Image 1 (cartoon, rainbow, N blue to C red):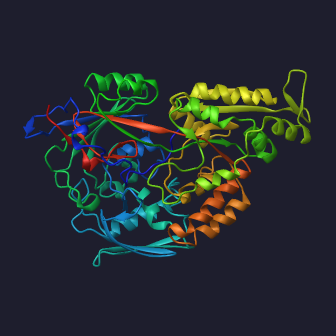
Image 2: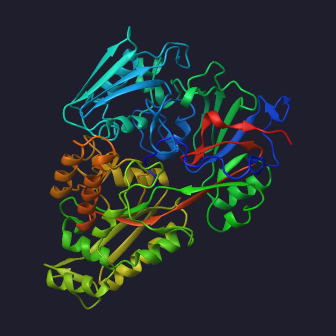
Image 3: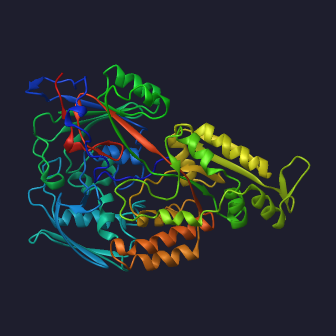
Amino acid sequence: MRLHGTKTAMLCVIALAATACFGGASGSGAGSQGAYVRNGTFTSTLSQDPGKLDPYHTVVAAANDLLSFAYDPLVSLDDKGNPIPGITTKWDVTPSSVTLTLRKGVTCSDGSAVTPSVVSKDLDYLKDPKASSPLLGIVLPGPDFTTKADDAAGTVTITTGKPDGLLLPSLAAFFVVCGSGTADPTALAKASSGSGPYKLTEAVPSDHYTLVRRDEYAWGPNGARINVPGAPQKIVLKIVNNDTTAANLLAGGSLNGGVVNGPDRERLVGTMKEYRFEDGGTLAVFNEHPGHPGADHVVRKALTQALDRGQIADVLTDRQGKIGNSTMGVPPLICDDSGAAAGIPAFDAASAAAALDAAGWRKGADGIRVKGGKRLSLTAMYSSDRPNASAGMELFSAAWHKLGVDVRAKSLNSAAFLQAVFQSDNWDVTPEINLATQLPSQSVSFFSGPGAPKGSNFAGIHNSAYEQLVAQAVQTPGRPGCQMWTEAEKALFARADVVPIAQRYVSYFGRGATFEISGEMPLPTSIRLRAN
């Protein structure tokens, strides 16, 4: 389940010759202007229903993919993770503060101005206890921060209670809400209220979402405009979570773009433009709350050692990915944390069995281990919407059953899966969390601190070594702190709090349009519909 992603930087700039980006089908439109379709419709898949459309209260990547059409990030990043002008044109950074200069003339979809006061109110809302926003800990390290708006100077200053070395790039994960949405955040569940290039006009959950172009938009990354030849008048995002269906719709010309992986990818290769890039890695996470087997680090380590992660990665990715080595995986990565993989317990089924034996978990007559009269049982939650999830779960179950564990696999759709894992305690392990982060700091709230409703630490992880290293890392601004972040993640892996399983590669196919890819969707300001 892919949880969090940002749409602030290109993940794959148009490659090869420009003509390779021109597909055979075009968006529907009222006419053409040269080689472009004028006022057409760009139709794309969305891999899952986004659920909540409220930027303050979602960490689901599909929601961020949709919201990126209607909202601007507070800070834009280029394809190397460096800040570039967007609605913010200048930034002054210290270890515990950042002062942002906003572009003049930015307006909300209702026509109101986007000012430093609007941004300040936006950010302050995150620390309102009544808001219970999951972005607290992702965008900002916690509620101990202040904001100061100077509308005359056009600046807003954010000061944190403690140093945060990755504060500036973290703000790229924050969509600016404005207008009526700032005044009444509850209205964001049904309509957009942002300064982005499009405005949400129709929402049919589990089916499709429609957005309409804002011709006045002229403040995208590096000053990108939207009222240009070929820019779609409408964006239609169809919920398609089946690769075969997506491939059929693309091949038949019903879509301009969509994600297709697995065997269906092969029949599209060479017939239209393919954008191929890394997606966030798949993580196995154990429930460490009291009463669960995962609360014992000996059990967690043994369960990890029993896994042939290479074999599982091959199945989960149709042999088109690799073994996971990171909690991140969505380019551009500010830090290369791949060195943390050295802390992952190596595949060694014999050592796993010996460790459980030594800890008093002995096999009974039925082959299941028992300690103190309690069977070693796991309820494994996974999403049925994830490609190859069932086949991957079979490998997890087989390895753990051989070790002497009673595994009860439970398949849920995406919405039910998120509800079960993040808001209940009725699970012991989930083998497929995908945080889709660009910064190690964006994962901290998931792996430490309070759980719901006050925080995002859904698994109840309390790793003192990780927390101490994070405290050191946040005090070092920018990339110099990356080595400390790597050591922090290594501490997580060593205690099997989090186990990287697979790193996926994703293919987005396009026809009848040119664009750049960001996340799993085209960068909104880059889409140009082409005539046949």
